[in-house]
Image (tube, rainbow, N blue to C red; front, side, top):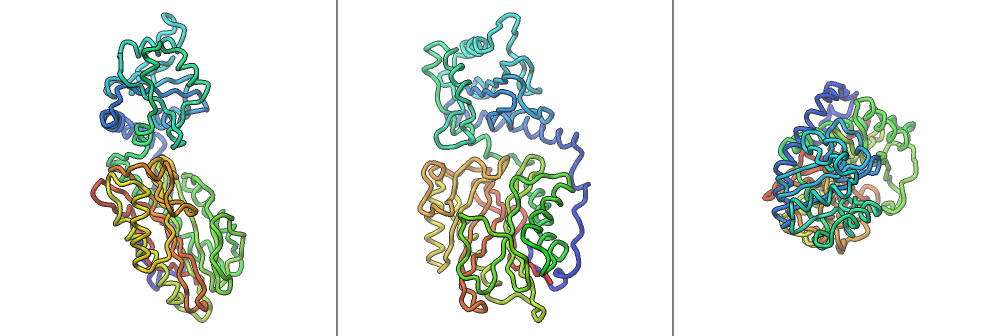
Length: 432
């Protein structure tokens, strides 16, 4: 995102209007087209890569496996009764062992009049396919890949004959791969979602939402919530606003939420904000400075802090590489930051159909030496990430006080290079 210019800090910013979001019918058509493409190309590629020729997903109404929830038609707001989706022939054949076809993608393959037992119908379907490996969504590492509930798992295993039961395996790679992979149209749509979120965030960090001496950080959080609702979108977490100011001492702890504060001149305001548009999630953090009456610009030390955080972003993204684990990327980026004299904390995560999405974890704020399990997962092509980190900088104008510059912007990795989806903040927004 471009930095401010002198005229940008006065007045209001043009509102986001309803036409930025297609009709519900058009949204459903778009999402179903993405689903058809993903099922046709992403699933077979993943199953071939992992050597799996059958994948069974089971969910009941209102207790959907996170993966199943992303495979339902847009007009299905939940699963129906018990929904069993089956991929065979390495993903080239799809069926629903259910009373209903699941959209056009999963034709119904169960006749309850001929076989009243749904689990027996599943066993018969798998017998005909005769797969050598049957993947289930169970995982010790990834919550999003652990969607098969205990009762359903027990019933499924009990229904299979011994020779099929012996072929069951965990589907971590399939579930995570399905959730993290973006097709080209989704990448474009995620970029548009980032643009819309940036515009809302920019307005929130302006006099339109902040009146110095009156507006509290809680007021700002709820302003953003209401603005998102007004535009017909959703947030996936409560926006968080906080301030740092001269004389406050060390930056606040990550482990405790910031206390509500009235925003006053001289404050450095921080917001963490994310929206959901067409099922895709954004996650962004930016800063604004509230000018004192005698100031026309922010103190140079604060402006320099943003640039230092930008430098850390660049060093982190330079370490992205297909096949490299999240922990390897974290270690290399931290080493590069230390060599550049940056006091950086890195806590970057995948982004997509969830906010804290499936894929490699690249640090947590309290685990800077690596994250066992999720951090050991290898980065894959066609995946999106929230480039989230902070850099602590001593600000001369604040008596050398340590200030934490917390930035977060969204990016896409195509397997060879990484790019920000809608730019980034490179300078402080100013609130007059």
